[in-house]
Length: 166
Image 1 (cartoon, rainbow, N blue to C red):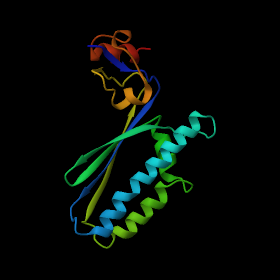
Image 2: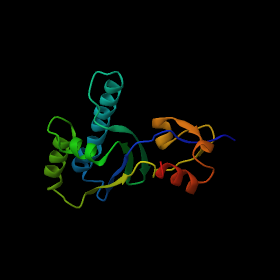
Image 3: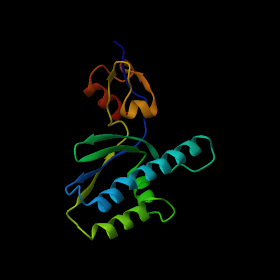
């Protein structure tokens, strides 16, 4: 079985964002929270495609994937940097700021209906490690392409060390 690792070499920010529903009968609040993310991801994917064609400046979004839980969801996003995440989140020209403001306005009706959460991890160049064995590429390997594991080392420790040392 072929083993490969991601081909991405730059700085990286991993952004986890999720929704946990506590009161599913609060349909208006749950709906507003749940429907905000697809529009933002569509905007980010459109920008990524336009930037790849040379038609727009990249926002720094590399891609994402979602997981579903019985009463919530978690999205994993990969970005070039934390600064790119902050710039997008605070921009009045993009979907995040208006969606965030609208959500907080709606959530005032019942602050215990849902939890929105996020975590951000800044990863220095060379400190992200991955291995994919099998026909599917997930995560960073799907977004950035893959190279043979042996080019960076046979073990996770070797791959991180060889990339961190330059």
